Image (cartoon, rainbow, N blue to C red; front, side, top):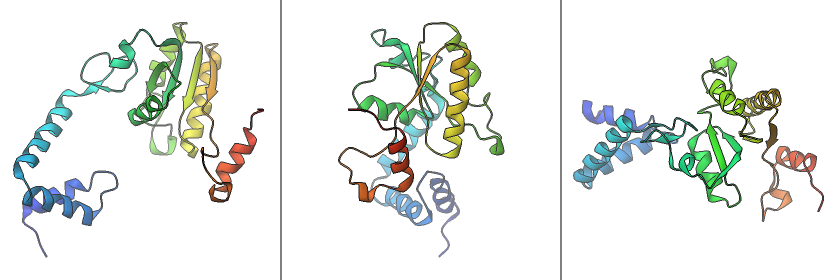
Length: 198
């Protein structure tokens, strides 16, 4: 069945969203048009306003409508620690787990020379400038365990070493409450390699 040009355009644009395939995009489009068009208009206005008004924090590079985000403005946090993450969602995950009270730096990606993603394109020179100020004593690297994430973590470790900053990596391994029989071999290998005394 051929949809109208506007509906076809809406369905195609919804497929830009992560995890949304053609069928899901069709369901969302029809839901927005069938159920409540006022809510669809409100959603469209919110998306447009966010696209126009949300920029990046000048300090950590996370999404923010103001020059300095709430976390970077919080002077009660530990100024000697910085946690380097790949994207703003990583900050949310770490903030939901109690224990970390330092600051952040968001790369907005990871090194991938084959895809043309260089150190400059993910803000490494800006991070280097922050490290050179002397306040940061520990840089916690919280990049993913993909090949690109590992390459990024090694690059960051070298950067920290040049600046005399201690570099640590978040631990990976068996999840709390997890059964060993369900853990993949790569995760189990990493857990064994990074075992700790107790």
